[in-house]
Length: 233
Image (cartoon, rainbow, N blue to C red; front, side):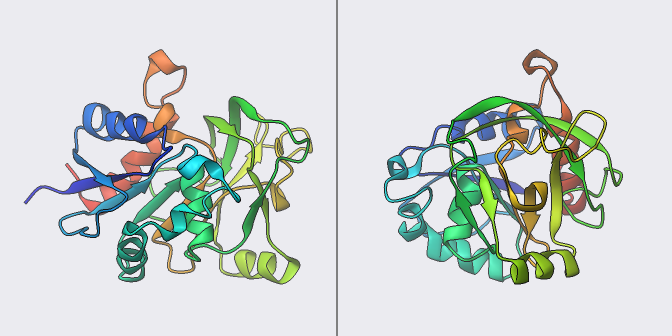
C-alpha cells in the first residue's frame, strides 16, 4: 500500500498548494488535502501543517486554528508517534496546540520579513535530517511577521539537553552571527522537534525551495530524508 501525505487547509492558509505541489509533483508522493473541519486522518503517513495566515492571525498567529476540529486528530496523530511537519504558520499552530514548547513573538524589528535565509543543520539523528550532515547550510525562503521564537531559560536548557534544536539561523558560511538571526529568535532557533522527535516546527519554507526555477532545491534534500525514513516512494 502506497504511503500518503496529508496537507491541512485552514481558512487563510496560503502555502497549502505549495506544499501539495512539492509533495505531489516534485516528490511524486500520493498527497491529499485535509479540510480544517475533517477529523479523520486514517491512511495518512506524514502530516503537513502549512504556512499562511490561518483565521487571519486574529488574536495571535495560530491561536484560533488551534481550536479547529481537525486539531484533536492532529494531537492524537502526533502523540501516537506519527510524523508531523509544521511550517511557518504551521509551526505557530503546533506551539499553540502544545505539541511543541515555546511561543512566537513579533519579529524583533517589528517588520514582516520575506527573503531567502540560511539555516544550519544541528543534528542528523532525526527523520527530518537523516540524509544531511551536521553543520550543513541550507537556503530557504522565509515569509513571516511573527517568527521571533521565544522560550524561557529553563525551557531553552530543556531543548538543548534533549537535543531538540534542528535548525539555527546562520550566514552562508554557517556562522550564527547577530545579523543572520533575522527575527531575534532565542539561540538563533529556526526549527525544533518535540522530545520524541516526530513533530517538527520550522519557520523557513522548505516547500518553496524544491526546484531550480525557485532558486534553491535544498528543500528537496530535507524531504528526501523524511521520505527515506518513512519509506515513501
